[in-house]
Length: 321
Image (cartoon, rainbow, N blue to C red; front, top):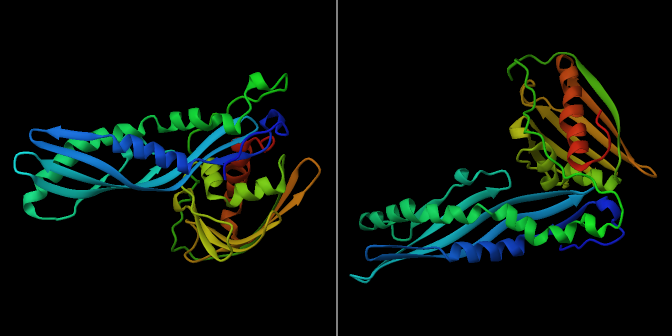
């Protein structure tokens, strides 16, 4: 849903987001569709078939964050002017994310008629057309911000004296700490973990930060497969943390099973997170049951460092622990 800022959002304090997927479709249809290749008597043209996924621009407390994860499918046609021969095929780009390097983009080239005589044309597309297509992704992030930042952010010149926070500069991605123990270890004594943390935001903002995959990708700085739907599995931190969302009460409670990859095989703890809305902040209460006693300290630190502090730092939800 497209959203524009308003003067109730003084100081760019509240979370504002805009769905930019329609713009991205037009952007890549124009950019990629304009690419052609001519070599000797062969001319290759490209047509975008579809652009799917998510492209969101978010702002909270003066921090503009772009999150995107899209897939693009194209079809190509090569025509030889000497013999009027025509060869067609497809190009699939399965994933282009906000943290994907330009040279990490995968292009899967296929032939509609996969016969040996068409292989030279396929090779031509791979060697000479794909480098042209790759250049179409170089300025996407910059162009996205230039086109839509004004819709989620009130500029300092328009703030009329209101304080403006500095732009967020994320720290490098950190991996979840792993212990030296393997998954074949014997399960011993189990303990519980209890934590209380204050976040300077609404319960709704915190609920979404925990379960919206786009926002989780921001603070975890890694791919995130998670949603607010009950009885769905989640995968975070490159598979180091997995589990199942068991039950949710929107903006109030999250119940889930949760495990570290290094725990004994098939062992899950049970986690309940309660969000208590206050006048100016939200208190988070975590109760985690059945944690292997040898991993209690590591698990407590992981919650503080990789969840709570990362969320606070990414979105400005209060001071670090």
